Amino acid sequence: MGPFALAQLLALISVTVALDDGLLKTPPMGWMAWERFRCDIDCKDDRENCISEDLFKDTADRLAEDGWKELGYEYVIIDDCWMSLLRDEHGRLQPEPSRFPGGIAKLARYIHDRGLKLGIYADMGTHTCMGFPGTTLDKIEIDAQTFASWGVDYLKFDGCYSNPIEQMLGYPLMSKALNATGRPMVYSCSWPVYVGGLPPNVNYSLLGDICHLWRNYYDIQDSWDSVQGIVEWFSNNQDDLQPAAGPGRWNDPDMLIIGNFGLSVDQARSQMALWAIMAAPLIMSNDLRNLDNSARAILQNKVAIAINQDPMGIQGRRLLQEKNRIEVYWRPLSNSASALVFLSRRTDMPYLYHTSLAKLKYQAGTYEANDVFTGSAVRGLNATSEFTISINPSGVVMWYVYPEQQSKLTESLHHRHKTFHKAKPEHSTVL
Ligand code: GLA
Image (cartoon, rainbow, N blue to C red; front, top):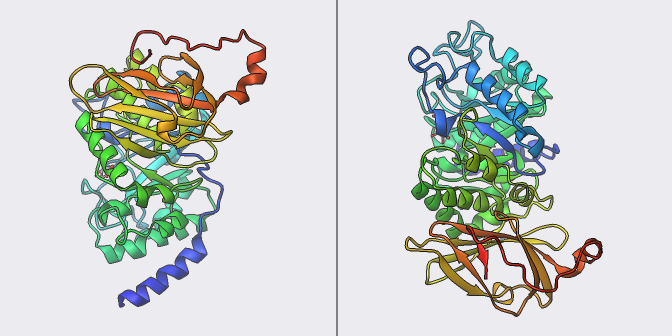
């Protein structure tokens, strides 16, 4: 088949499978095993951490009992290494019985009983990235049917061990096969990663038609370097990526690593802030049985989550890269509100950054802001007047900004202070 015939075939498929199914009006939230637990299949010596049904049950318990579910964290997603090395006698994928003795359908019931949803992993290709059975073109239908019959709610479809032509056929076909099961399932495509992440190799409008979200770039690792590299790539390519996102179609810069070993408290706040600005999936990969309080507070920050989950679903952008290694990110939100993130890429000491909302392209007027991580309020913020904030090295100051008028009704109930309120003198201080 020549490339032209292929393109025609794809156009046809995309018309028939456009995903206007109401799923993921806002970015998905939940938990995924990969970054933290990888392909640990050593249940003999590492019972607690190996990829087994117990890990997913434990995680579901924590999500349901520790306040996560109420905040929106609902998907429990199995990644690679859950499978048996052999398909069953009907050609179906099956879990490795020693690690998933109850089977996936039973695990799905356990998760559903707690008001949560189950995600699973498969790979468009001959093998998964870790060498387990892959989903070749002839297996797409049976695998979609199997997942639906188990009660799966979300499929991460990776792309190791396939070529670009197989991917071009397989990703739309899986979308069609999932739709044909009649079970609503979120479809997460890793396709862009395998073809360089950018146009012309990636057709983001086709992706938006067939997938609910897609990984664009390399895997996140447990380090600040990795987070910075991802943010840098997303920002450098925001003209291509930002317009692709919207309700039901999201770019995916990969998992939240907050609560693991690689980030300081400031860096963890930075990841949460930037993922909220980027309208990124808030899918944690950490050990919810052992999470320290600062990580918990960052991941459960209600304003950061509300910014991420804003119903307009407009992905934010990097507005400015200053010579002093301060960067400003911005995202428009519903009700004329917006979010600002001031990120320091410096490595010396807290930096005093002077700016004004007018310099950040805000229209004339008076605004108010909530400092997302300190909880303090900034009042009477005239667009043209300068303000100064202190940003820690590799940290952020994040503001939820709204026009003053909007709050007048609410405010008339409270005492009105026409002056700046001083923030608590911890991580971000309004001076
Ligand atoms: C790829 C994906 C990761 C993870 C691993 C599993 O590297 O990008 O997110 O799923 O495969 O093997």
